[in-house]
Image (tube, rainbow, N blue to C red; front, side, top):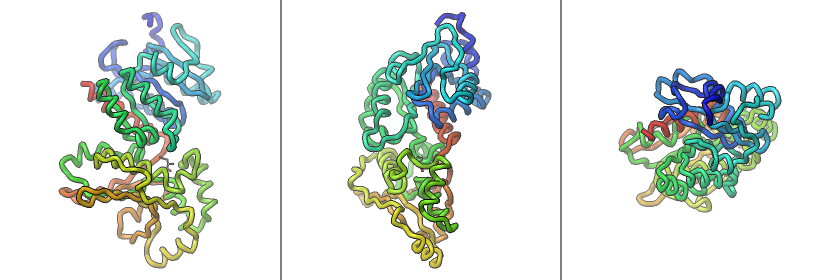
Length: 368
Ligand code: HSE
């Protein structure tokens, strides 16, 4: 951590921090360096002035990825070099040697030994076990580090445990990007919708299935539309999680916790995907002036909640019916403000990278 090693720190820092140790400089460790983390790095390189105006200075000190390699420098990594190295070789091996640089740390070593204030957990989503993201979140929070994640598995499966651990350690656990990526969905109730009671929500929470349904309306077959969605990067590693409604179901569980303060048992959610919808069903909806949408919803009935993920034929006047392609949307049925629909991206490199950014900004704000 010697002062002679400041070239990486100065080049890697984003924001207006003046020195290592400056309270405004907030250090990040990126666990998983796929599309979303790379999107965050691209954003950090572009938004230095904006972040500075927000009083936030973010510095990436570590990246750990089992395929692309791992780097750690306590004084910060040079993000422009990171982008160049990845663009050239697809991995981090070509990152220049600098005094104080460590290579090859695995994820848990990076979490435990780096000087990061916040761990960005962006490994792949495993909706059956939540791993390896769940262990990453546990380790980071236990070590007194904030966690910012876009990984649905740990949040859906261990919400209470992880929030309790964060509270015990006096750190933050933020996950806005798990539902509708960078489109404000979770934090909205605590900010602009504060004071409302949410009576119910209905949403298009999965971009892959909405894309497939839209393409089928255009005359494409189901299989062709699915392979397009895979090629465009919307689908999960196992697209069965999208088309059978599991991805939307896990997002509903997260919404149940955040908007309704309730733990919804996955087995209690009525779930049916879109794989059974045939071109004849699409044509029938068209004739009736309707559209099929995979609707994820939670309805409050007194003290009870009911939840489902089921394809529905919506009349065209429904705001959700007009949402096409991979776009997501959610209608909040609020007791005071009435129904409010938010429409926006539900996936994407920069859009989901932005969700990580806004969580980091809010973590920094919370620290103050
Ligand atoms: N597979 C997901 C979707 C990605 O299609 O919406 C974002 O969670």
